Image (cartoon, rainbow, N blue to C red; front, side):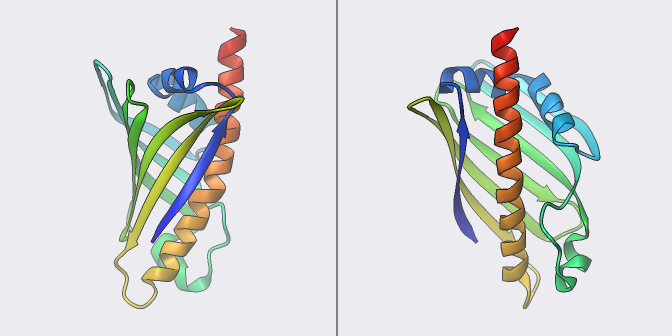
Length: 165
């Protein structure tokens, strides 16, 4: 399943990309998003390239229908990898849901606009469960969209805090 998502930020892309290249941003963000568990598995920064891989546990942000509970459960533990080209302001967000045959990959691009910038994300979600795979993909897409709104809100809070420091 493919879909587009746009996350609005109240600062220009030069400030947002600095935040996205800071490992402490991810820890602060996931604390504010009430992650049930958070662990940095890997992190690297070389020149204009930044990558961080984290293991997270979150409650789902959307109701889980009975047919999907065996596949995704009420909480989700996932491995998320954010990789950014800081100069080009482009990146890839990969999400692997642990214990579920679901993979989500988002191609990201920060674009300046009046009053800030937007992270334009082109998502591709796949689920290899026969018969109900498409329904699970839709459930995961809905959850990503719900979490995206919270993510943008928290990122804007952190951007405001970094501007007043």
